[in-house]
Amino acid sequence: MKDLYHPKYVETLFDKMSSSYERMNYISSFGFSERWRRQCVNSIDIKKDSVVLDLMTGMGECWKPILKVLDHNGELIGLDFSSGMLKMAKKRKEKYSKHKINLLQENVFKNSIRSGSVDCIISGFGLKTFSEKQLNDFALEVNRLLKSKGSFSFIEVSIPQNRILKFFYLLYLKYCIPFLGFLFLGNPETYKMLGVYTSRFNSSINTKEVFEMNGFKVEYLNYFYGCATGIKGQKL
Image (cartoon, rainbow, N blue to C red; front, side, top):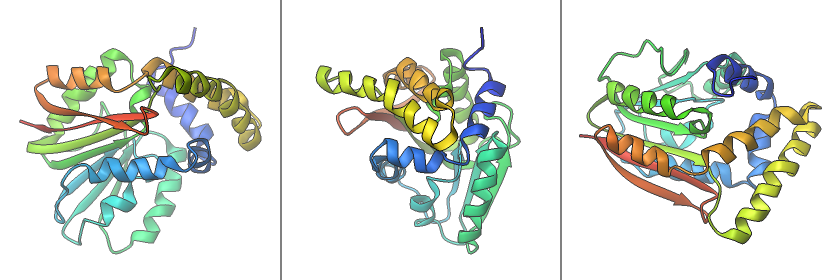
Protein backbone atom coordinates (compact mmCIF):
# COMPACT_ATOMS: atom_id res chain seq x y z
CA MET A 1 0.00 0.00 0.00
CA LYS A 2 1.33 3.44 -0.93
CA ASP A 3 2.49 5.73 1.87
CA LEU A 4 0.42 8.89 1.35
CA TYR A 5 2.82 10.90 3.50
CA HIS A 6 6.09 9.75 1.96
CA PRO A 7 7.88 12.87 0.61
CA LYS A 8 8.50 11.31 -2.80
CA TYR A 9 4.83 10.41 -3.22
CA VAL A 10 3.72 13.94 -2.26
CA GLU A 11 6.37 15.49 -4.51
CA THR A 12 5.23 13.43 -7.51
CA LEU A 13 1.59 14.27 -6.81
CA PHE A 14 2.20 18.02 -6.84
CA ASP A 15 4.47 17.78 -9.88
CA LYS A 16 1.52 16.28 -11.75
CA MET A 17 -0.85 19.01 -10.55
CA SER A 18 1.51 21.95 -11.10
CA SER A 19 0.18 22.98 -14.51
CA SER A 20 -3.38 23.47 -13.23
CA TYR A 21 -3.06 23.77 -9.46
CA GLU A 22 -3.54 27.52 -9.12
CA ARG A 23 -6.67 27.63 -11.31
CA MET A 24 -8.00 24.51 -9.64
CA ASN A 25 -7.46 25.98 -6.19
CA TYR A 26 -9.25 29.17 -7.10
CA ILE A 27 -12.22 27.43 -8.73
CA SER A 28 -12.59 24.68 -6.13
CA SER A 29 -12.59 27.22 -3.27
CA PHE A 30 -14.92 29.60 -5.16
CA GLY A 31 -12.20 32.24 -5.05
CA PHE A 32 -11.73 32.05 -1.29
CA SER A 33 -8.22 30.52 -1.47
CA GLU A 34 -6.66 33.83 -2.51
CA ARG A 35 -8.49 35.70 0.25
CA TRP A 36 -7.53 33.09 2.84
CA ARG A 37 -3.86 33.32 1.88
CA ARG A 38 -3.99 37.08 2.25
CA GLN A 39 -5.64 36.78 5.67
CA CYS A 40 -3.06 34.20 6.73
CA VAL A 41 -0.18 36.52 5.83
CA ASN A 42 -1.81 39.62 7.29
CA SER A 43 -2.55 37.91 10.61
CA ILE A 44 1.05 38.48 11.75
CA ASP A 45 3.17 41.62 11.84
CA ILE A 46 5.76 41.44 9.07
CA LYS A 47 8.31 44.26 9.13
CA LYS A 48 9.46 45.78 5.85
CA ASP A 49 13.06 44.54 6.34
CA SER A 50 12.09 41.03 7.49
CA VAL A 51 13.40 37.71 6.26
CA VAL A 52 10.20 35.81 5.43
CA LEU A 53 10.20 32.09 4.68
CA ASP A 54 7.30 30.67 2.66
CA LEU A 55 7.35 26.92 3.30
CA MET A 56 5.75 24.64 0.71
CA THR A 57 5.66 27.79 -1.40
CA GLY A 58 4.13 26.03 -4.40
CA MET A 59 3.76 28.55 -7.19
CA GLY A 60 4.24 31.48 -4.85
CA GLU A 61 0.55 32.09 -4.27
CA CYS A 62 1.24 33.70 -0.87
CA TRP A 63 3.84 36.12 -2.20
CA LYS A 64 1.64 39.06 -3.17
CA PRO A 65 0.56 40.09 0.37
CA ILE A 66 4.08 39.37 1.69
CA LEU A 67 5.81 41.51 -0.93
CA LYS A 68 3.36 44.34 -0.34
CA VAL A 69 5.11 44.75 3.01
CA LEU A 70 8.76 43.90 2.26
CA ASP A 71 11.05 46.57 0.81
CA HIS A 72 14.46 46.17 -0.89
CA ASN A 73 16.05 45.40 2.49
CA GLY A 74 13.69 42.49 3.10
CA GLU A 75 14.03 38.98 1.75
CA LEU A 76 11.52 36.33 0.73
CA ILE A 77 12.64 32.70 0.68
CA GLY A 78 10.37 30.25 -1.10
CA LEU A 79 10.98 26.57 -0.37
CA ASP A 80 9.36 23.58 -2.06
CA PHE A 81 10.51 20.14 -3.20
CA SER A 82 8.27 20.02 -6.28
CA SER A 83 10.18 20.96 -9.43
CA GLY A 84 6.87 21.42 -11.25
CA MET A 85 5.60 23.92 -8.70
CA LEU A 86 8.91 25.80 -8.57
CA LYS A 87 8.96 26.07 -12.34
CA MET A 88 5.76 28.10 -12.07
CA ALA A 89 7.14 30.03 -9.08
CA LYS A 90 10.17 31.10 -11.14
CA LYS A 91 7.82 32.64 -13.71
CA ARG A 92 6.00 34.49 -10.92
CA LYS A 93 9.34 35.73 -9.56
CA GLU A 94 9.92 37.64 -12.81
CA LYS A 95 7.01 39.93 -11.90
CA TYR A 96 8.78 40.99 -8.70
CA SER A 97 12.20 41.97 -10.04
CA LYS A 98 12.58 44.77 -7.46
CA HIS A 99 12.35 42.33 -4.56
CA LYS A 100 14.90 39.88 -3.19
CA ILE A 101 13.40 36.42 -3.68
CA ASN A 102 15.36 33.21 -3.25
CA LEU A 103 13.86 29.90 -4.35
CA LEU A 104 15.05 26.62 -2.87
CA GLN A 105 14.12 23.20 -4.21
CA GLU A 106 14.50 21.36 -0.92
CA ASN A 107 12.58 19.23 1.53
CA VAL A 108 11.18 21.07 4.55
CA PHE A 109 12.91 18.59 6.85
CA LYS A 110 16.25 18.67 5.03
CA ASN A 111 16.91 22.26 4.08
CA SER A 112 19.99 24.47 3.92
CA ILE A 113 18.55 27.51 5.73
CA ARG A 114 20.66 28.66 8.66
CA SER A 115 19.25 28.17 12.16
CA GLY A 116 17.72 31.26 13.78
CA SER A 117 17.87 33.30 10.57
CA VAL A 118 14.17 33.84 9.78
CA ASP A 119 11.84 36.53 11.16
CA CYS A 120 8.55 35.09 9.91
CA ILE A 121 7.35 31.80 8.44
CA ILE A 122 4.26 31.44 6.24
CA SER A 123 2.71 28.27 4.86
CA GLY A 124 -0.43 28.03 2.77
CA PHE A 125 -2.21 24.70 2.28
CA GLY A 126 0.72 22.35 2.88
CA LEU A 127 0.02 20.99 6.36
CA LYS A 128 -2.45 18.33 5.25
CA THR A 129 0.33 16.33 3.58
CA PHE A 130 2.05 15.73 6.94
CA SER A 131 1.58 12.66 9.11
CA GLU A 132 1.33 13.19 12.88
CA LYS A 133 5.05 12.48 13.32
CA GLN A 134 5.93 14.80 10.45
CA LEU A 135 3.79 17.51 12.03
CA ASN A 136 5.85 17.28 15.20
CA ASP A 137 9.06 17.34 13.15
CA PHE A 138 7.67 20.38 11.35
CA ALA A 139 7.19 22.20 14.66
CA LEU A 140 10.80 21.39 15.60
CA GLU A 141 12.01 22.71 12.25
CA VAL A 142 10.00 25.93 12.59
CA ASN A 143 11.58 26.37 16.02
CA ARG A 144 15.05 25.85 14.53
CA LEU A 145 14.56 28.33 11.71
CA LEU A 146 12.90 31.20 13.58
CA LYS A 147 14.75 33.92 15.41
CA SER A 148 13.83 34.53 19.04
CA LYS A 149 10.35 36.15 19.09
CA GLY A 150 9.93 35.19 15.43
CA SER A 151 6.36 34.63 14.24
CA PHE A 152 4.50 32.22 11.99
CA SER A 153 1.13 31.81 10.31
CA PHE A 154 -0.21 28.67 8.61
CA ILE A 155 -3.50 27.92 6.90
CA GLU A 156 -5.08 24.71 5.62
CA VAL A 157 -8.35 23.64 3.98
CA SER A 158 -10.42 21.91 6.65
CA ILE A 159 -13.66 20.08 7.36
CA PRO A 160 -16.35 22.44 8.78
CA GLN A 161 -18.02 21.38 12.03
CA ASN A 162 -21.54 22.43 11.06
CA ARG A 163 -23.32 19.15 10.17
CA ILE A 164 -25.15 20.43 7.12
CA LEU A 165 -22.14 22.29 5.74
CA LYS A 166 -19.93 19.30 6.51
CA PHE A 167 -22.24 16.92 4.61
CA PHE A 168 -22.19 18.99 1.41
CA TYR A 169 -18.52 19.83 1.78
CA LEU A 170 -17.55 16.15 1.94
CA LEU A 171 -19.69 15.41 -1.10
CA TYR A 172 -17.90 18.23 -2.89
CA LEU A 173 -14.48 16.84 -1.96
CA LYS A 174 -15.40 13.30 -2.92
CA TYR A 175 -17.11 13.94 -6.25
CA CYS A 176 -16.73 17.51 -7.54
CA ILE A 177 -12.99 17.92 -6.97
CA PRO A 178 -12.10 14.67 -8.82
CA PHE A 179 -14.41 15.73 -11.68
CA LEU A 180 -12.59 19.06 -11.94
CA GLY A 181 -9.34 17.11 -11.88
CA PHE A 182 -10.60 15.10 -14.84
CA LEU A 183 -11.44 18.31 -16.73
CA PHE A 184 -8.01 19.85 -16.08
CA LEU A 185 -5.74 16.81 -16.23
CA GLY A 186 -7.84 13.98 -17.63
CA ASN A 187 -7.14 12.19 -14.35
CA PRO A 188 -9.63 12.39 -11.46
CA GLU A 189 -7.41 10.34 -9.11
CA THR A 190 -4.73 13.03 -8.77
CA TYR A 191 -7.02 15.70 -7.40
CA LYS A 192 -9.03 13.12 -5.50
CA MET A 193 -6.00 12.85 -3.20
CA LEU A 194 -6.50 16.46 -2.05
CA GLY A 195 -9.85 15.38 -0.64
CA VAL A 196 -8.26 12.36 1.02
CA TYR A 197 -5.62 14.52 2.69
CA THR A 198 -8.19 17.10 3.77
CA SER A 199 -10.48 14.47 5.29
CA ARG A 200 -7.59 12.98 7.24
CA PHE A 201 -6.32 16.39 8.36
CA ASN A 202 -9.81 17.55 9.46
CA SER A 203 -8.72 20.86 11.05
CA SER A 204 -5.75 22.70 12.55
CA ILE A 205 -6.71 21.82 16.14
CA ASN A 206 -4.12 19.05 16.30
CA THR A 207 -1.53 21.35 14.76
CA LYS A 208 -2.20 23.90 17.50
CA GLU A 209 -1.68 21.25 20.18
CA VAL A 210 1.55 20.02 18.59
CA PHE A 211 3.00 23.54 18.44
CA GLU A 212 1.96 24.28 22.01
CA MET A 213 3.69 21.09 23.19
CA ASN A 214 6.83 22.32 21.43
CA GLY A 215 6.84 25.55 23.42
CA PHE A 216 5.23 28.03 21.02
CA LYS A 217 2.68 30.67 21.85
CA VAL A 218 -0.20 29.70 19.53
CA GLU A 219 -3.58 31.06 18.45
CA TYR A 220 -6.17 29.07 16.48
CA LEU A 221 -7.62 30.66 13.34
CA ASN A 222 -10.99 29.86 11.76
CA TYR A 223 -11.91 30.92 8.21
CA PHE A 224 -15.41 30.88 6.71
CA TYR A 225 -17.23 28.58 9.15
CA GLY A 226 -14.28 26.22 9.38
CA CYS A 227 -13.83 25.53 5.65
CA ALA A 228 -10.24 26.59 6.33
CA THR A 229 -8.42 26.75 9.63
CA GLY A 230 -4.93 27.63 10.75
CA ILE A 231 -2.67 28.75 13.52
CA LYS A 232 -0.49 31.74 14.14
CA GLY A 233 2.01 32.30 16.88
CA GLN A 234 5.44 33.18 18.13
CA LYS A 235 8.64 31.51 19.20
CA LEU A 236 9.19 32.36 22.86
